[in-house]
Image (cartoon, rainbow, N blue to C red; front, side, top):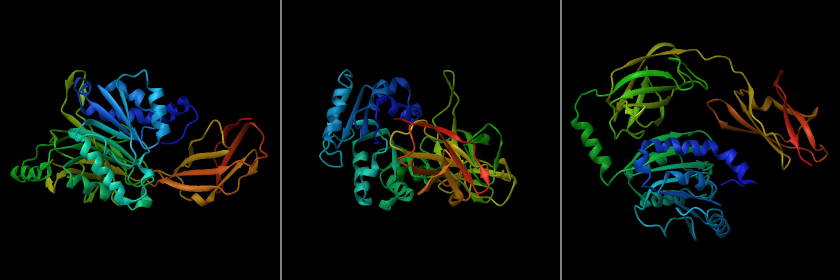
Length: 398
């Protein structure tokens, strides 16, 4: 887990993570979750365990660092549902089989630098997760191990795991959600599909842009993603068995949402999010859901339009720079090496540019402030060729 100076600084950064984890918990009813035992892998000093603990009967944390576990015990001493475990090696050997209902990790797997060791750790997670339980895992910076999304899907197939989400595959931070099923579930699922014949139980009720409620999507770019609201999706449907076509091309499914509710009434609808491929065709295109190459729905229409022009912008910037390292996030950057940065009218040297998400053409721009830049408020200016972006203020503390 990244190092943060204070708990407040951590919680500002982790709010989106907590929201994400809580969204995944919507796959189970609150009264069911109240009996669950949860596990955080790589818990550090336990700062994420505290906000998550309110959902569970017990919450456990495991870490390989003695100091982190000791600090977590101190930080959570007033939380009777918290249990801490020290692992002497990257594994879960001290934890019992099928002992947890919800397992999550946040920025843990970069500590495992070898592909086979990472797969061994996933086998451990599978071992301690009970059938019917959920896992939400982040894989940050594992590209150097040779581990890919294909490895993850193959692992899921061989371990009777239903893949419910697989986000950020081509970025520096890939997230996935699994549900574990009993041994033999995958084979029985295939038999059930074959026995279903040519029935088309799923109804596509609505198709909108994933970023808005508009029933339209561009053929490429950051907004080329759609949300399907479908009815009667089989409970065993997962990303490892489903596919969605747009015209004659196949989209990339990123998540299957929980059953939606209207008040206390369950609607029976679920949301499927799909990234469009780079389409050459625009106009009305048919969208259809398949399960193991069998049609699961009839076709529904999506209006596909040409993409709008790129609008480069600064998506995020620090307000305060503690260590003189400045990180900016820029979106819709077609020519990253045209990026130039200045602070207080002074050009910055050794500017690093790293693509963190190719779909919105997002780049992290990092540079170090020279030592002679004095404390106070300074304005960072970014130019891309002839385009000047609005300056952003940063504070350099004394």
